[in-house]
Figure 1: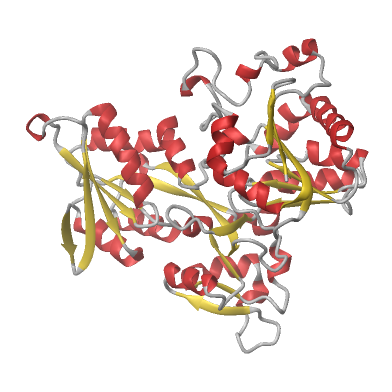
Figure 2: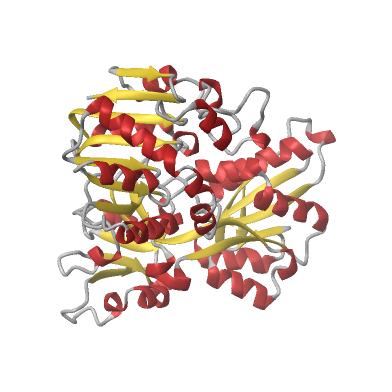
Length: 465
């Protein structure tokens, strides 16, 4: 570990290299990155070094000023600007080569809340209530003004609910933790990485417009003496499954959500009957038809709406992708189920609900996309009422005929094919970044004792509280 001073800006440099003697290692190249992303970038750089033999030094800087100082120094081979304004400035000043730029991950505008039950806040309209104190960053003021103009009026105006503007994201999140404010409106990345103790509700384009998403982009610098290696690293961050899985593990979003509409139009209708079959099975097995239910990883809402349609439950659909939530809300309105359903964009690892809240929790096909399945299961158990049931897993359910399942899904409903990579498959062959290998191990890690593994119609676990 060494330090580098650039005009009095302190920069930590973590040297990462492949497992080889330094005498035989390739020449080092240098990457400049904001401290928001440094842990994930260091991990990705380590994997890249192991795969290619290139030595990588990741230089972490604090704040936009530090990043600009590092960019101006000309000592980097790759620069990853921390945000939109920095990206435009780097290009304008010639600190990066714009034609080399590739999106690495995506920032989403989000409502950030304390863990647990954040005062019943579930969407943008809730933070506009006069009793809710909101904070944001001065650098985001123009963006916030476009999303929620009433937050940006004079703070002495009775119509403004903006309590504080901060220059520093750490100070802003401390204010949230200490209860000085009730909510933060900012990029989701401020509550990712090492700061994952919050509820994060990302905003769809229907609420935030063009301000909903912005790429974090990697560039090769014009002064790089290893431009081919630098471009190879940028491409690795942008395109490789290994890097994308690392970003997911650190709670970053790796796309801009535009594919949600394609899924709703193509894949979702094919599985509509399956969701209805699973809901009928749930009703027959558990007879929970009144109260509250939660569908985790609801996508565009098929199972949420099917369950609401065949019971008297009030069903909440939750998905990390806000564009799916916007589609689900539209479907609920079309089916006349808007009053008996609610759709919330949030992360299953930090649920925005009080303890002992739901009579039934269901989730199909979501577990192998969760970075910390044990944490998510503990959250599910927390919000489950005493006497309630959680039914989690993957497959077609008991009521879907095997022939029909095979036609829809070539791997069928065999237990070994649900939630895990198939026989002989690797990550390259599977859509699952975090496969579920053993429910018994997962339940032990989560501290759950009253559960039953069900291998009929897929792979499922039933949890009782």
